[in-house]
Image 1 (cartoon, rainbow, N blue to C red):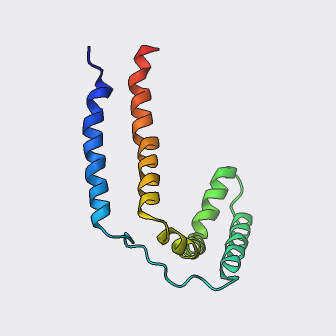
Image 2: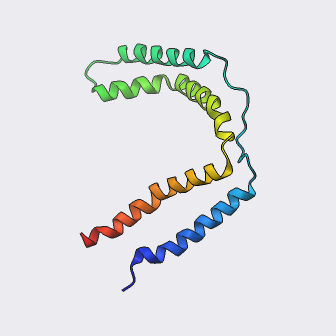
Length: 130
């Protein structure tokens, strides 16, 4: 009797090999550029402004709403400041990501594929045996 998971292995390995070949052909930087990072203290100021906006928006929520609704509305009200903070944080980390070797990036990508695709699929196929 042939197991369905075993028939998926060649197809997934072929897909993985094709994707890795595409990544290797893309060059060493994969479009990540280590541009100038934010000024020192800029990220902290953005974070403080975002937290202040959240506190203020949360305090002005209408009565009778659930706590989760209050939080969601406060987050929606401060979306622009959150986006600016995330952009600054990502640009600060961009240089370290671009400096990683091709092998390290390929290993982390393969690990994420295994965690998000192969593990759930194999556990799903293993459910009837239990």
